Length: 78
Image (tube, rainbow, N blue to C red; front, side, top):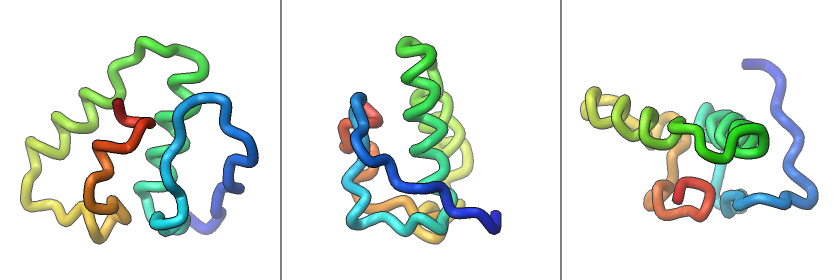
């Protein structure tokens, strides 16, 4: 993905600690998708589906995708 999304300037909903996230990795883009989905549909099941997908493929290196340690503890994913 050649374009890097601009950082959120003043998020009104829960957001991640972007200081330890590489904005060129897929994790950052997944966070933006989650944020936008929460904005339009607060009761969506994106988080549960993402966690289930990652559990289904435990050999996938999520750190290579930019997921930081403890990503699921961030307020965005609660």
